[in-house]
Length: 220
Ligand code: PRP
Ligand code: URA
Image (cartoon, rainbow, N blue to C red; front, side, top):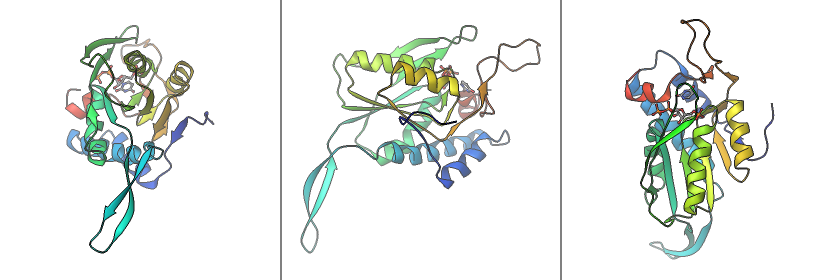
């Protein structure tokens, strides 16, 4: 299936290798967190390939070299909880970035996002926001977060996720066509409303990796 040009699915062998380990049900929380960190760093590298730069001069031991520095202030916006694990890897690439947390959880019955944390200051302090959440399922949490950031005044927003369902890509692209989406995989579908008690809960990505928050924090 092909998506619009704002959807970027990494084909990097390292990303694909690490994603396979991440999905594996045998992967323990410690290893799971390491993989989230590493994949995020690789996706962060891809998601920042068009950041604006300003030319600078750098004094080397021998001469003056032409250099550059990032022109924009960057904000990393993890969606709590699962987005937290994506911060560290990307922050290592951009230690000057600001981190602004948005707390949302999905209501189990409606799958609608419920906001519980937002401490954004009144006016925007960054020019580019990278919204971080490993799972783009229905897309409701990503859309709600980007709604918040746009109301705040953020001018340029990118979404960095690890696995998406087609439903989430559709909702996010339609609600915010100006937002580039960076992913390591687009999976098949979402689980339907359970019929039998043994059925998995509704709205999980298949094949996916299960509950990204629980697997990171050992709470499953
Ligand atoms: C998960 C995930 C996303 C959301 C994705 O969070 O981390 O934020 O679900 O689903 P959506 O695209 O259908 O909105 P969850 O609500 O499980 O909260 P948690 O990270 O605190 O466990
Ligand atoms: N949230 C998760 O953690 N996993 C999914 O598959 C969907 C939403």
